[in-house]
Each structure stands twice: as structure tokens, then as C-alpha cells.
Length: 346
Image (cartoon, rainbow, N blue to C red; front, side, top):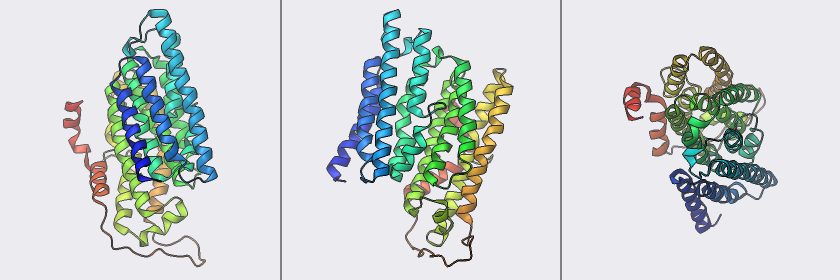
């Protein structure tokens, strides 16, 4: 892709995100979401492969429908209350429509079907943007409207997202699809706590974005898209493989690592809110995700191809580990002891 064109698209993404995050008026938030959608489409379809074009088309249709619902929800609220302010969303029908619209934008169950397909058709760098940066504007809208939203609906969608994200990721062999289902599962954790402590939702999102960025950049450096390729990548970059192992375990939420922090705080908050059954269910469902993270981690550290036929091993490269990946991995693994400081900040 032409560097000038790429610069324009990336700038538009930043502009759209900034407009949505900083707006008070629904029309401005909607405009920011539209700029974001239009800026990411060329980045999805830049390879001109039929799969990429299909992904861009699916993404456009879903996001256009979700944006129309956001507009419809805000207009219904303005019609009934005379308020265009984002934080003044008080009409119950508007709240339900908005929850559906944002769920569609994020890929929460039952509006999740587009996300794995779109991620599978996109390059890894665009997949990284779709999984992290593109989820920030809808998340901020949820954060601003959280007092008005229906907690029962959010809890139901959250538990279903964690369940389906775990179950559907079990038999995947494509890494981008596994990461898509991992994203759906994490969104469940963010949605369940939104009505009770929205700051924890944002903390979870930031840490999820940090760990997912590390995984995507590492995969991009290793040029890995499938589990079978991952199994023989250890010969190419052993140090990166070790880093990927730790980041995957952190993404799974295992205790001494960063990924355990949001899960721990969310379970604690749910218990305080007398929602111990929901906390128990969502914790058990996260074991499904743990299984496919462990499968990925196993494939990362396996030292021989699992079949006896001749298999091309990749050449060992003596390039140093990229600095950004090293910093991100360190943060993805070691932030748990800093949790009192993080809690003081939020």
C-alpha cells in the first residue's frame, strides 16, 4: 500500500477515535465511529485477496448496521427526553437499542459471528487494530452510559460471550480465529462488571489490549498464521517463542502474571455485589479459554513436528528481539505486583 495512503488511513483512525472519546453529543460520537469504520476498510482489504474483500464487506455491513442503531437509539432518547448528551441516556428502549448496537460493534454474543471471519481475512497488523484500537470508542460509549444500562442483560450477554468464546475456540487451527474467540471471551469479562464498576471494565480492556498487542506483534515477527507453522517456528526465533509462551499464559489469566489482575478484581467486585453465582459461572467458563491458550502455548514450545514425514524447518535468524515486543512482554508478565499502584490510579 502507498505510504501516503496508509498515513491518511492511520491518521483518520486516530481522528475518529479521538472524536468519539472526547464527544458529549451523540451525533459527534456517531461521526467518530463512522470515520473509524471507513478508515479501517482499506487496511482490511489491502491484499486484494477474495478472503480480504469478503472480510471488508462483512465488516462494513455489520458496522453500518450498528452505527444506524446508535443513531436510532440516541434519536429515540432525544425524542422522549429532549437530551442529546451521551451521559443523559435515560429512556429504557434507547438503553436496550444502544446495548445491542455496541455489542454489535464490539462482537459480543449474540452479535459475534462477524468477528472471527473478519479477523481471519485481515493481515495480522490490521487484526491487531481490529482487536484493540477499534474496540476503544465503543468501550468509552459503554463507560459513559453505564449507569443507565440494564445489568441483567449485560450479565447474560457476558456469560454467553465467555462460554461461546471458549467453546468455539477449542477446535480452531487458525491463530487469528483463536485470537478472535479469545477477544469475545475477554469482552464477556468486561461486560459483566460494567454496570457495577465501569473503571474495572476499562482496566480489563487496557490490560487485554496490552497482552493482545504483544501476541499479534510476536506472531507478525515470526510470520505465523497457523498452529502447524507455530510448531516449527522455534528453530527461527527461540527467544520470541519463550516470550510468546509467557504472554499467552498471561492472557489466559494464570495467577503470577498480569492477566490474573483484572479477573481477580472482577471476581472480588462481583462477590461484593452478591453475584457469587455469576462469578463462579464466568470463572468456570474461563477454563475453556485456558484450554486453547495452553494448546497454543504447547505448540509454541514444542521442539519437533508431531509427524514422521520430512518437514521443512525454518532457518534460525540472529536478529535481536524487537525492543517494543520486549517491553510489551515484560509488562504483560510482571504487572501483578504493581496492582496496588494501578488501583490507586484508577
